[in-house]
Image (cartoon, rainbow, N blue to C red; front, side, top):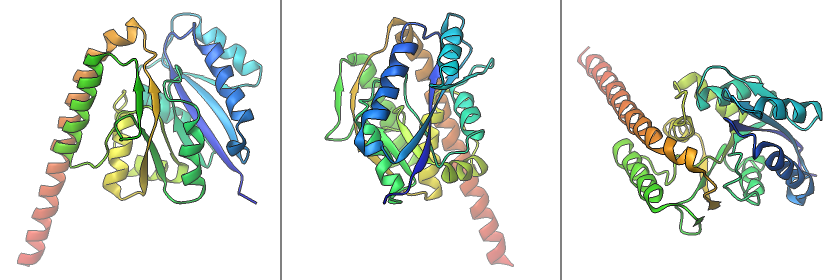
Length: 259
């Protein structure tokens, strides 16, 4: 009999009054009906990053119905929202996905089964593997995403194909290890930095191809340019930090050999 594991799924939201109720209920229905998920116990945390519309009221209604846990942070930062949700968790596995369900729900078992079988500690969705499928994504966003991932692989020496895909799950043990070893971004780059830090630390990880549909609205499209600049800045910061760390290690080694 397969061991029962608890899974916390954090979903970041900001002014999502139109989609919150329907998409949360759609996710819950899938978690209950999918046979491959029967040995997992799920908790869904809606991580509200300061919504100013009806999102808080809808979130609290869903919480009172016993469907989710609603958590509101007044300070902006998707990374902060994830960390707040996961730090308070008592789950075996933690993860996150987008409220718009861009990543097809059928990939949830694909992500959780390798972790439950102890094959890996971290599973990342990728839109850039040969078997991945991407639909309705504007050309500009597709090109910039590929360029950013290429920069990550080139400048940071990573083997990850799609560091910024918002579909990741890992053991709570590995998350705590990553939190202690590396400073994580408070913003959207948290998703990428989680994978990059795990890779750097030698935590076993795997990418899986996903079917992904761009369900973004005009508001998120406007945010994309701002996020693009944030990503570039953080990539260069990580490169500088890694170089400085390497130089310090080399300096200590040289001094030790001289003695």
